[in-house]
Length: 231
Ligand code: OAD
Image (cartoon, protein in one colour):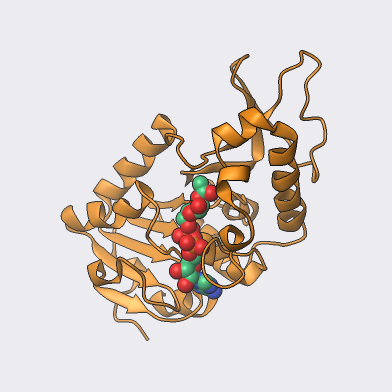
């Protein structure tokens, strides 16, 4: 049982990572069974890989689309969506690309690393959304390729998304991190930013992380079991 209660705070940010969707059956990136244990990101998740072999990169992303399409948001996603509806100032800042927060009903979601379901054509400057799993029409009639609208290794985060997320984080008095290893920057620096602005910090994660020392409260357990203790 945690002494921190969500309703005692005015501006709340939930900062989520792959562990948030682990109980939905979506693999995390690091640790046992992690995506980057099986796939070398240099071949599948960076602009250079896409430029040299877009079809191979799409094959990987289509596997991910198909896998996520078989899973569904869990009780944790639903609880955050419910709190967002019920309370005035709840913001979700996520590193996840699976879209599960929105699928559970949340609306104020900043997707720092983009979305598995969005595609763009940089040459033509267009962005689209498709839930096809797999998405096979990646080669366009114009001869260019749709590119997954995902922040790959070496990419900059999208400025408008970062701006919204940073504003929410600077203004929050409670930040709850859920299921992130805290090693991928700049996102990993966000809890520290909240702390410097006086927020109370809670970490939900079954394991200790690289940034656990920053947190006022650490709840060691899976998201769906730990989140209700904050109510
Ligand atoms: P990681 O795979 O690095 O970390 C997942 C964290 O979730 C670990 O600390 C686990 O201990 C924890 N975890 C596992 N099961 C959990 C559960 N049921 N409840 C709560 N926590 C649980 O994933 P991220 O930190 O999200 O970027 O990784 C950050 C970024 O690295 C990702 O957004 C991705 C990746 O490269 C891109 O692809 C751009």
